[in-house]
Image (tube, rainbow, N blue to C red):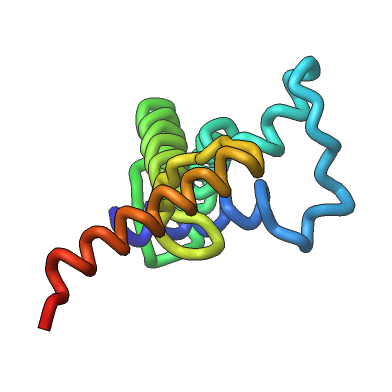
Length: 129
């Protein structure tokens, strides 16, 4: 099953984000359902899972009995795991949520002065030799 999941995620990532398909991938337009397929790892992941199910007789990495229930289950497993992995990993490794700081220059300079003054007070108090 791990081979199936990794193959599904790899294929989904290449289809959704890969530079090789950039020219044939339609532009992002979420008003058209067909375009959503090519920009959504959950949507593309489902169809990748169904595709991998259909070709499972040609590979020894994974084998499933050919029936409609297994096709649906492979699509769901592929969609779920492709979406989950794409939410946890990006091009730079693990995604780490970063807190966004919104301030203008005057606030930033005031914050810097405050931190500088606090450090001076702390260092006078704690670094006496």
